[in-house]
Image (tube, rainbow, N blue to C red; front, side):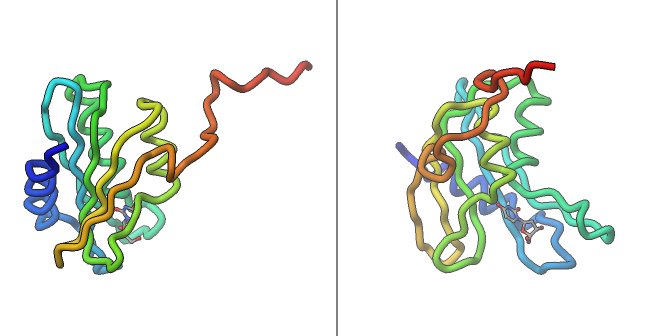
Length: 134
Ligand code: THU
């Protein structure tokens, strides 16, 4: 897996993160099935709970552009060790992929590779749920 194009795209996008309240800028870069790289950044709001994570922005942009197949994800922050996607973003990703290699990186050069199944084992899927009898 050549992470460099995804890393470069995420780092570029991160300069556009809108995080005036937390000061914590996050960028994500998703590689889709046809080789397209789709980025997302966190977008915060004065109504603090309205903020959206970079990973979910990337998924939303990819879906809006017609992509449903995801091959890899890079997340870039300044955290050390590199931060992992939050729980909401993990569940959002699992809607579209059974598993996904994920590179968590920071601007200082640290990188940690993980997988969606490692971050979210035994994920909830509505298709697996049994309807409750009335
Ligand atoms: N954030 C992300 O963009 N992705 C995550 O996986 C965790 C947190 C953002 C949300 C908020 O704008 C800021 O980081 C602080 O929580």
